[in-house]
Amino acid sequence: GFTLLTPYRDDYRFLAQVEDEDPDLGVPGVDRLEVRHDDDAQWYGLTYGLRARRGLAFGLSGFLATRTLDHGEAEIRARDGTLSDLPEGANESRNATAEASAEHVVLRAGVLWDASREVRLGLMLQPPGIELGSRARYERLTARVDATDAAFATRAGDTATHLPIPWEVRTGVGWRNSAQALLTFDVSVLGPVGSASDPQPLFERDAAGNPAGLLIPEIAYRQIGVRTAVGFELSPAKVVPIRGGVLVERSSAPEVPLTSTVYSRERVHTLGGALSLGLHTRSYDISVGATGLYGVGERLALVRGGTGEPSSYRATDTR
Image 1 (cartoon, rainbow, N blue to C red):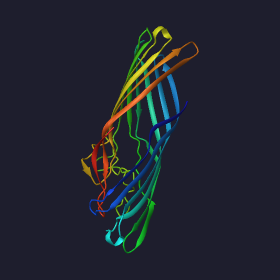
Image 2: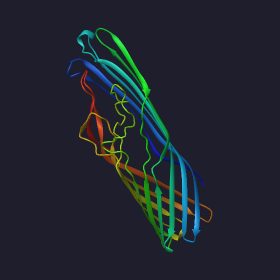
Image 3: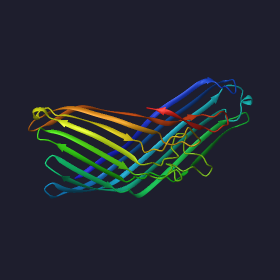
Image 4: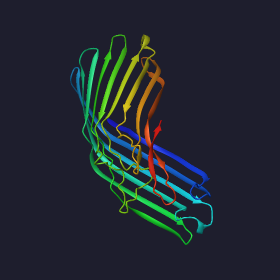
């Protein structure tokens, strides 16, 4: 068989603008930050399954896993007033972009065993992905207007990136009785990547120590993650199947610090559910349903420093 998977997708855009009197300067001001972020993974694979004997089957899959990340930030910092009365950096704009991509080979092996007429067991093993190549590039433009001059600075270059694929172990058990009732239980464990002493940043800082962007994780290592799911199927009179399930996922991101000078990933634990109602005939099996996901945890919020001061971050709740 041929398989196409999209195991990961994280796309968002937001705009934040604050217009108020600058408490340090006592003049009207505006701070504006616009961020766009596109992060996608696509896996292309071939799968082979073999029934060794009745009740015992083996499977092997090989994937070419691609990952692309595109991040952009546009920031404007402006203050009213006579230029000679404003400090350096009161009127400044910044535009930053960062791009990264990587390719891996991922292998998966599985076994399916019918322990009895009612019980079926499965196990899947995935070693860490084998990196074929990775690359990253950043560009930055900063423009500043001061009392004596107007100047701009550009910086661009290639940098190291870390987009690894961890190992995974997945196991499940299914139970079906003669009345067409099915109950399944599924657990996945995903391995760690990096550590606190080896933070595995998505983008390394440049030679001057500048980050690729204000909201690009510089600490991106992951701990062991656990995903658990329970599902069921009921088929009254074998005509109207009712299917549903619950998913619980523990985030693999490290703990979010109370304050930090380095941006890191959010830590969000997820609860999900699904329910559908269908119609089953000799030729068709059609279901209509709904799924929902709810996540709760913590992330770092940007704390913009005063004029001439660096930005920092503090922990805040997220849902």
